[in-house]
Each structure stands twice: as structure tokens, then as C-alpha cells.
Length: 278
Image (cartoon, rainbow, N blue to C red; front, side):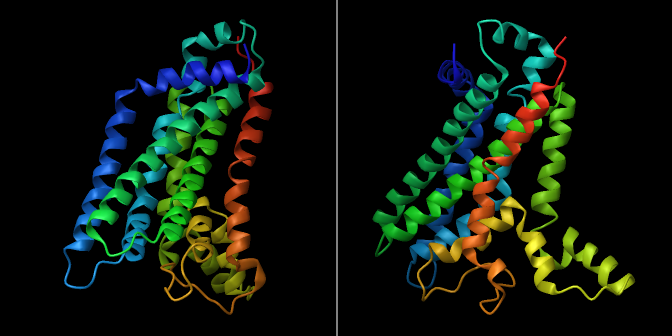
């Protein structure tokens, strides 16, 4: 077998998962609901604003889809012992990690693209203009966010040997990179700023703390939005600062988001290669 064979088999397995279909259906319903509310409001329907609203809600929802769909991809097989059979076919450990990533990434991307496809139909039916360039850009960034969290979950799954550890790692990462990062004044970074500047008096720049916050895949995703939004639409990001330093530019945020597609996989594979599978 090979990376392709592992990916094909795993794709068929995850495709039959009821939980994936349920969550995917809920996300598609959310898209329909938000686009319906947008076209029935008091003002003129605007696709761009509804895409921004959808993305704001999706920040909480999409990582859950990715992590829930992926965290047992390798850890579950290690705990059950089936990983030894998979590696005897023969497959290398690299084949397993990359194959699982490709299959779960394909499913996650499909979920997002189908949901945005439903949204496109709603926009054509209910809105004056589809805004295809913006629509495609937002969909593309959302797929990248999904793949970033798939990469993280695969990395965690490859580095852990049990379901409980993989679940704990995924939940912990969701809280640290998402819930505790979204609101600047209540984020981990705010606490770090309080300690370093307020208690220790280091006088570090607010821009530096914002860059540290941007290292989260969720925040990097949000900070990338000026790349796809029209220039006459105000970006929805909290504390957006057009006069900020170059390292806070949307292009840097986009680069960070791309890095999340690669680095967790590499670290997970490194750890998996050194694991004793018994």
C-alpha cells in the first residue's frame, strides 16, 4: 500500500461516520439560516455582510468539526491495536500519517464547500448579487482554516497513544487557540500582557502581543480577511489597525495560517516515528 491507498481506505471509513454527516448537516442548516435572516432584514440584502456573519459563527463551529472528525484517526487505531495490521501491509508510518491527513482533509474541505455551495444557491435566489470573487475568497480561507485544524488533530492523534489523551489534547487546543483567543480583552494574551507589562513593567508593545495572538490559526484566519474583502467594506476583525507594523499585515497572517497546515503534521510524524507501538 501507499499514502494513496491509506487515504482511500480511510476516506471510505470516515465517510460512513454518522457524526460527520450530522455535524455537516447542521453546518449547512446554519448557512441557510444566516442567509435567510440576511435577506429578510430591514435593509437591502448584502452577500458580503452575510459571509462575514457566517464566518464569525463558523470560528466556533468549524474547529469542532475538524477536531471531532480527526482526533481518533491514529490514536484510535493505536489503542485498539489495529495500527500494527495497517503497518504490516506494508505501509510506513509516514504513509499512515499523510494518508490519514489527506483523507480527513478531503472530507473536511468537502463539508465546507458543500455548505458554501448551498449558500451560493441561497445568494442567487435571495440576494441582488452573488459577489463571486468575495464568495470564493471567503470559502477558500474557510477551507484553509478547516485544514489547519485537521492538521493539528492529526498531529495530536499521531503523538498520543490513547483515545482519552487525543481527546484531551484536541479539547485543550480548541480552548487555547480559539475560545481563549477570540476576544482580545479576555484572551490568554491579555493575561500575558498583564503579567509582563503590568506586573513586571517590561513595557512591551501592544503590537507584539497582537502578533503573538495572531499565531493562533483562528486569529490568523480572521486577520487574513482583508485579502478577500472588497476595499470599501470594513473588515470585521476586532482591533484591526491599518497603521500597524508590517508583521501584522494580512499577508503575514495568511502565511501563518498556511504554516498550520504543515507544522503540526511534521511534529506529529516526528513523534509517531519514535513511538513504541508494542
